[in-house]
Image (cartoon, rainbow, N blue to C red; front, top):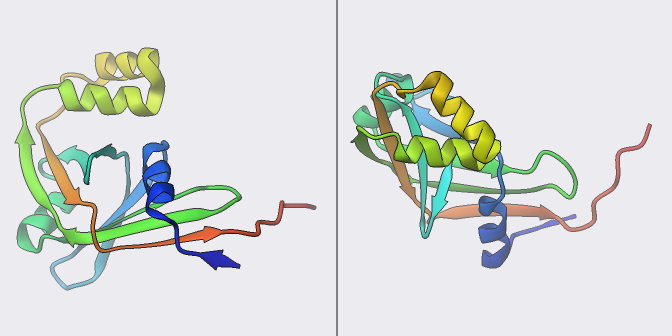
Length: 145
C-alpha cells in the first residue's frame, strides 16, 4: 500500500544522501537516464557534470528534464521532479567540494577533490522543485529468505 509524500517528507527525503537519476531527452526523443549526485538548496536541486557530457548537450537542445530521488531499502520512498533545467558554467571548486563532502564526508570529500581536482570544466544543472510526484510505502514488509 502506498501514498503520496507530504511536503515535509519530500524535504526530508531530498536532504538525505541518495544517488538520484536525471533523465534528459536525446535528439531522437528517446530518454537518456544517468545516476547523479545532487545538492538540495531551498526550492532547487543542483547537479554538477562535465561541460561536454551528453546530459548537457541534450539540455542545451531541449531543457526538459526529470530527476528521481529514491530510497534503496524499506520503507521505500521516492519523489520525482520535472521541468526545464537551467545551466551555468562554474570555474571554482567550491560547489564540487561541497557536493563531494555531502556524499563522502569531510575527509573523504577532501580526498576526492585532492585526487580528481582541479575538477574538469563543469556545468551546473539547476532544477526548481515543482511539478513533483511521490510515493511512500506506508506498510513495508521486511525481506526474508
